[in-house]
Image (cartoon, rainbow, N blue to C red; front, side):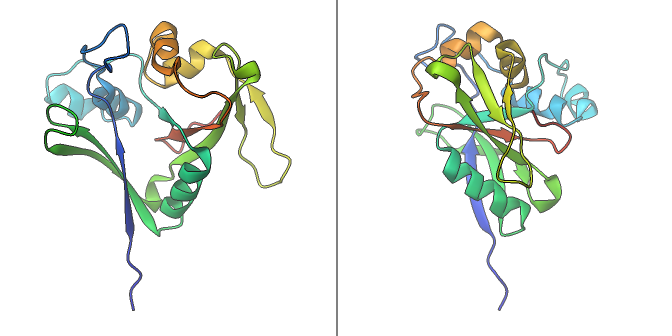
Length: 177
């Protein structure tokens, strides 16, 4: 009997959320992810300039859950579908943007904040051993690779519980902290 492939869905925001100072403005995350994946020609055909910065990853709550899911994707037991709402969130249809499978080689890293402060991000360097290296990240680099300015990043994550580890979900196989 053939094993059934699971599908995990992950929403990408088209607009800044209501709690953000730029609420309602377009994030261009779809285009930034496309640019990060090297799909510049497709962007140009759609009459988009290649936006800056590229979005190489997304950051989500619940590291253990996302670690399990990304491991399943990379082992061929699941796929990850990124989507966005066509209109108002939860009140409109969804539009699939990207599909990642085992060949995509997406990744996940644990993210924490020293002193639970957004100015002091730390990532765990993935490795084979149980003593993984902790890397101090430059906040502006983390924000930039998430497709945001540093201020937009801080405004986006200001209400997150920083006492719990977050997941950095990498969209490319070529980049890890």
